[in-house]
Length: 180
Image (cartoon, rainbow, N blue to C red; front, side, top):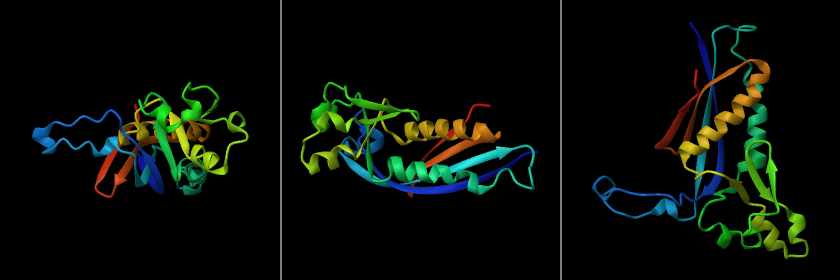
């Protein structure tokens, strides 16, 4: 026997799936809409699992408050871009050489503002919106990335993340399951 709890989180983000390929027989057209810069109202459902209860709970839902802060501070109203995206140097021209990027412990990078000191405010505003990853930001890849981040943190209190659901739209979602 085991128990599972879940908690939902919402955030707005933008991305571009530069690697999108469609089969016209199934898609009925070859409109590569996801290759365009676009945004979503995303939802993440985190599922935690345990075969024992502590104080009658898998864990307190409050133990996921840190994740809401992570989403708000890191991803909400940001643009997730793959460092290998062919448009990277066009969208981040001051960083086209992919230097002056600051690595973060959760597997993403941001620009180093010291390298663009003296630029106009609108340049800073543009660059502060980028979250740079090393994968195509599909819903599948984003959910796998977030599962790793959540599991690493939950390991500290001995809680297993069974899976993460990532809803790109209310009708389209990906689910990634942790390995046993």
